[in-house]
Figure: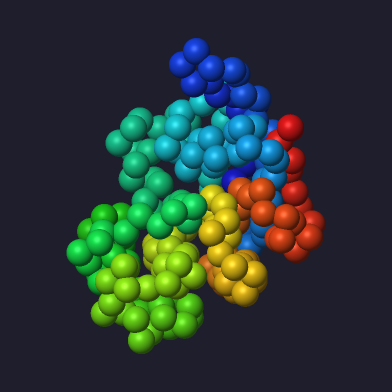
Length: 209
C-alpha cells in the first residue's frame, strides 16, 4: 500500500537526511524507531506529503505523491492518508462529533456523520460526542485523534509518537486500537516512536541511526 525508495531531505543549511526505504501492505504495521534528532518525525511528514523530499519516490496505492502538484497533493492526502499527531489539533469550539464531521467534509465535501458515530462507538466515546475537546482526558483525546485519522478510510495511517504523553494503561489501549482498526480499515500503519514500552509489540521495525 505504501512503498518508498531513495528518499533524501534537507532543511535549509541543515544536514542531508537519507531516509530508509520501506514497504508496508494493507493491514500491516511498521514501527520506525531511533534517537531524537535522527529525522523520524521529518520522515513521517514526508510520507504524509507535508514535506517534499529532495529525491526519491513515495507510492501510495500506485500514486507517487512526490509527482503531484501542491493542490493535488492536499486532495490526495485528505482522501488517502490519515495522521495521528503527537499532540491533537482540534477545533476547540467544535464538539468531538463536529470535529470528525469537519474532517470528512474537508476531504469529500460531505459530513459523514454515520462513519463518525461508528468510529466513536468503536473507540468507546459514544457518550462524549457532544463534548468539547477540552472536556476530555488526554487518553480520550488521543482516541478521538485515531477516529479523525480513520474517518475517510485512508489507505495509509501515520502515527507520530502516539503514546508519548500517555500512561501505561492508555498506551496499551491506543496501540491495540491503532493495530486492530488499521486491519479493519485495511490501512498500512506506520508508527514513529521512541517509546520503549511498545517496541516489543511489533516485529517489523526500522531503526533510524
